[in-house]
Amino acid sequence: MSKRRVIIFDTTLRDGEQAPGFSMNTEEKIQLALQIERLGVDVMEAGFPISSPGDFEAVTKVAQIIKNAGVAGLCRANEKDISVGWDALKHAVRPRIHTFIATSDIHLQHKLKKSREEALEIAVNAVKFARNLCDDVEFSAEDALRSDVDFLCQVTEAVIAAGASTVNLPDTVGYTMPFEIDKVISTVLNRVPNIDKARISVHCHNDLGLAVANSLMSVNAGASQVECTINGIGERAGNCSLEEVVMGLNVRKDLFEDIEIGVKTDEIYRASRMLTSITGVGVQPNKAIVGKNAFAHEAGIHQDGMLKNRTTYEIMTPESVGYPSTSLVLGKHSGRHAFIQRIEALGFELEKDAVQSAFEEFKVLADKKKEVFDEDIESIILNQSKDTTVAYTMETVNILSGDTTIPTATVKLADSEGNVSIDASTGDGPVDAVMKAIERIAGIAGRLKSYQIKALTAGKDAQGEVVLAAEFDNAGYDVRGRGSDTDVVVASAKAYLDALNKYITRKQSKDVRNTEKGV
Ligand code: KIV
Ligand code: ZN
Image 1 (cartoon, rainbow, N blue to C red):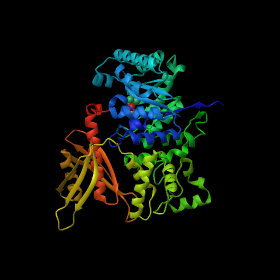
Image 2: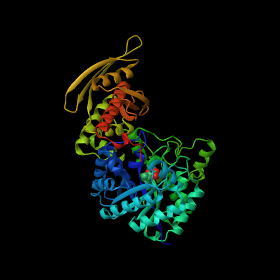
Image 3: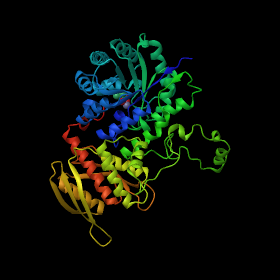
Image 4: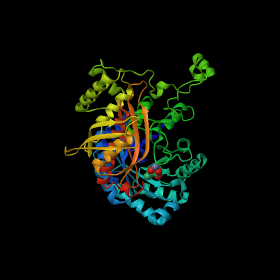
């Protein structure tokens, strides 16, 4: 039987990254893009090029580096967005322009203040313009699943006639039930006369926890592209989770026997873990496929069954998703070769200089800690991929604290021109003091919105990792910072400075997300 290929379109770097708390710098995006490529997705959406100079740079670099997957960039349906998007994408081996406009009456009336006829014309013109630049054009009818189905069919037919080879029908607000999406996809596939010239794609948000169910239902109804993200990250409750939809299609081959996908499932765990270490946002322990407990069998009855035959309680093996069976530990006697092997095993690719500085950092840590775990190595690697153009770098931090003294921190920072400033502050506690000292040097006031600290590994000598969100200058949005160190106050200082640097970069770059919420 000839199989029907379902395109896996990963939008972790665009819809995922757009969610609060998940922003990544260019270096981090490149590391993740390389892992997404190893995962074997057909297309990855690398960003929204016009949204900020940072996004433009990241899409350009990803387009230059990725050879074995298509690279898409999101553009609103206007010539300026599409031209800028194309400038970033044109270096790709397989570039794709992804343009969109809303089609639901709710969005047209309240957000765009446009009629259906106007939206249709804008959509067609945008696709025609994009097709003059690029052979592969995807059109998305934003909020498709709350759009009038007759109008949706009309738009689908018109954009295909204008040259779109993929028409994406997003459930933008995650409102739809599986039996409804089944009906919409079937209607579009049956009614649109030129449907044989394009793929129908779905892009389901998870507001009611139905994104994966809706995506699988759509594939069953004939959709041939699924848009999804690693760990299901994305706006609000997130997007369809890549690992869940892929393993759904894989484990239930008996139901999807005519379907073929290209994902290498044993790269899934590595991708999930890399995303977690980059963003500092973990998945819940009971998360399907990639959670800590996804393959743990606690109950006696279950353990007994597993010992007799694994299939009693296991529908897929941990190996099939790349779950590691043992965790390797390095120490101060480990050499450069073993260290490099571990970096590669974790899925990272570092330049020669970065390997050298990472190795030096590893040696310092191995002197402080007996055992260096994968989590420590990931944190060292991420220190190398910090933005090189940051406003401030940390030189030294000294803290005086205890139960009979006023907590006081002294901080020395260097700015991007190498000028060194030193200042001190007292605070309610050592963390408060260190953050105030940083603010005094930068001349920027901040408010801590969330603060989490965790030990990266077991053991009293473990590194502390701090992930925080802060708002600076009452800007109206939060930025995320991450830092790790064997001293938790130093880790807090690093995380706060990381957030402050991101705020300064974003302020200078006139990021459109500062004025427009999302797209
Ligand atoms: O959710 C959505 O509708 C989107 C589109 C821009 C594809 O992300
Ligand atoms: Zn979306």
